[in-house]
Image (cartoon, protein in one colour):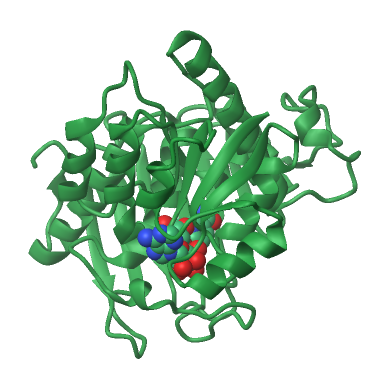
Length: 369
Ligand SMILES: NC(=O)c1ccc[n+]([C@@H]2O[C@H](COP(=O)([O-])OP(=O)(O)OC[C@H]3O[C@@H](n4cnc5c(N)ncnc54)[C@H](O)[C@@H]3O)[C@@H](O)[C@H]2O)c1
């Protein structure tokens, strides 16, 4: 079992507890240390509730403790703090598992690129939504040409949180109300959609056109539309919103091919719907004869007993554990499901390009900056 330390992710955060459960669900990792919050009381209370003995006041203090025995660090701080913590960890050759987005700007990306050496560093991003078995199944179907030539991919992540915040957490946090050149909504949600577009198509777009709006009381960008064009003629469309009432987390995937189209909705994640050119509509789930069936991870409980967000996160943590094993044994880790710096770089370039497009009100070639 690999030993993990968390930086960020206290009991008062959004991402912390899902990581705490998902990383340990299949006994591949154990959380043994952390600086969960810079607030001393919250830090101590998190360690108490989770039974963690090694607790530190700052990540620097933790990294300077020579007696601490860990295999990787998980970064769960607000996004603007990722870059400096990643750099501190890579300088010490400590494997890094970072929440998305890896960083929030081209400048921060350069800071990480300057120090990152693929031959000696382990650096992966938790793009969790591709951990759902039915999203993985869809990837297989696209790869096997069951949908034919892909004409369109439409990905949406509309949320209502700026008009109607979730009651279970303090939202929005201050750091989410501070837009950089890449607005926070794009760092937050656009990074997920970029990941899913690449995960499914295995291709990056060539050019894009974007428009930003600000509708809510917070005076930050809260609604983004991005149109994408790919080399082979595929069209893409991304919609991110925090002002879409009725959508708690409306992550939705539509892929339109010449032979069939596919629909997947995160709030009903065990079903994947296909519509064929014959007119037939077919809904599959884990109980169907699907490619993904043999993997026991996707069947922690038999079909008909719904699995969801945490289980899909745990699937990704299993893939990360496999990659970490390869890294420790062979210094190399390639996986269909675990993504590193190059993917994060393409994400930042796409989102940076969207900001240029919105500002200049024109199509932007993604190779042009
Ligand atoms: N994959 C997902 O579904 C998902 C969901 C939510 C958030 N996220 C990502 O997770 C990250 C955190 O988001 P969140 O919503 O949980 O934020 P949050 O503000 O709710 O929590 C951040 C936590 O980090 C702590 N912290 C801040 N600075 C720190 C430091 N220097 N050292 C140690 N702890 C520190 C805070 O006290 C808090 O506990 C972001 O990068 C966000 O994009 C991902």
